[in-house]
Length: 632
Image (cartoon, rainbow, N blue to C red; front, side, top):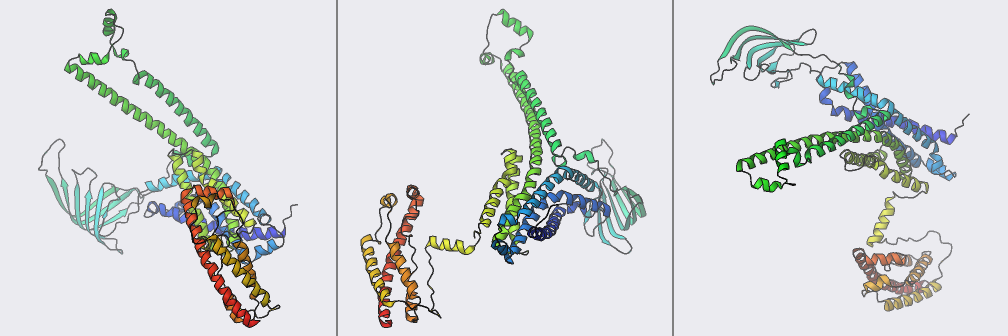
C-alpha cells in the first residue's frame, strides 16, 4: 500500500482546496466573458430554461481547458505565498527539505492535470464544441420574442416596420400605430395607420394575429409592365381590421453535421486524417494546374494555326515565323482583332488563375487551421505544467498570500501568455511562420522562465527584492548611503585612542601621496585606459584601513567622536577603475564606442569624486585627531 508522508498530505490538502476554488472562479470569469460575446443572440429570444442550461453547460465544457492553466497558476501562487507568509516554508527548509522535495507531490498532481486536460480536449472537447456551435446557430435562427418598443420602429418581423407611440401594459393595447408593409416590394408598399391595435401570437407560435381599430390603409396600385410617374393608389378607411402574419418563434435545433468539417470539432486522429486528405487534394490540384499551364498558358503559337494555314506554310518552305513582322504588315482592322483576342485571352487566363489561387489558398488555410488545432491540444495541456513551475517558485519568492498580490501577478502573467499565444497563432494562421513555431511560441518563452524561477527559488535567491535592485541602481548612478552610527549603550572594550591616532596620521599621509601621484582630476587617455595591464590599486587597501578605524572608534563613549566618524563618506572601492574584472571584457567594451564612451565618462566622474572624498577624509582625520587628543 502506498504511504503518503504527512508533509505531502499537508501540501496536497493546502493546494487542492485552493485549486478547486480558483478553478471555479476562473471558469466563472471566462463564462462571463463568453456570454458577453453572445449576449445579443440570447436576449429577447424567449428561450426556454432547458435550452439556456444546455448552452451554458456546453460553453463551460469548452472553457475548462483554458481555465485549468490559470487556476493552477493562481493556486500555486496563493498556496506558496501563504506558506512563506506564515513562515511554514521557512520551517520546512530549516528542517533540511529542499523546495523540489516540498513540491514533489504537486508535480505529480500537475502532470495528472496536464494529462487530463489533453484527454479532455481530445475526447470531450470536440463533442462539446460541436454541440455548442449547433446550439448557437439554432439560437441565432430563432425569431425574437414579440416585444415592440415605444417610440421606435420595430423591424424584427420580415417585410414589416411597426411604430407604436405608446402602450398600455395592463390591457395590452397599442396606441397610434403605424405599419409599413414591404412584403411585396417597395413599389407595392402598404401603409396602415390606426388609433389603437393589439398584437398576439397564435397558439402554435408560428403566426402573429393583428387587430387594428379606427384607421386607414394606403396602397400603391402599380400594374406590372407599366412605367408611369403617376401611380394610382388605394385608400381604405376601417373601424376594425384583422390580419394574420407569419412569425415563427419556436426553437428548432439545426443539423449537428453542419460543424463536422470544423477543426475544433475533431480529435487528433481525425485532424491527422483531414490534414493528409487535404494535402493529397492540394497536390492533385497542383498537378492539374501544371498540366493546364503547359497545355494553355504556354501553348506554342503553332497550335493556333488552322489546317489551311499550316498547309500554305509547308508549301512555302518557311521554317519559322516572326510574329512581330506578321503583325506589322497586317491591316489596321486585323491588328485590332488580334489585340482584342489577345486581351480576352489574357483576361480569361487571369480570372482562371485567380480562381485557382483562391482555391489552393483556401485549402492551405484549412490545413493550417487543422494543424493549429492539433498543436493547441498539446500546448494548452503543457501550459498547466508551465504555469505550475512559474507560480510555485514565484509564490515562494514573493511570500504574499491571499487574493491580493497573487491575483495581480497571475493576471499579468496570463495576459503576457495570451498576447504571445495570440501573436503566434495569428502568424501561423496567415502562413507567415511555421505552424509549430507559432503555436509553441508561448511555451518556448515561458518554460525557461519557469525553470529559472524554480532554480532561483530553490537557491533562496531574492530576485524580486526591490531593495536589491534599488541598491544596484544607486551604485550604477553613483548615489551612496550615509553613515548612521549611534553611541552604544554597552561597550565591552574601549577603543585604543593612541593606536587610532597613529593609524589616522599614517592613513592621511598615504592618501595625500596617492592623490598627488595618480592625478585623479585629469582626464585619462581613452586607449591607455582600456588596454593597459591591470594592477592592484592601493586605494582599496587605504579604504579598508579607513573602515577598520571607523569600526574601532564606533565603540567610543564620546558622542563627539561618533558624530565625527559619521561625516566620513561611503566610498566605493572600484568605481573609479575599469568596470569588469576580466581584461578581455574591458577591452571589448572599449572597442564598442558608445558603451566604451559611457563607461569612460563614468570612470572620470568617479575619479573626480574620489579626489574630493580623499580631501574630505584628510580634513575629517585632522578634526578627529584633535578630538582624540582631548579624550586620551
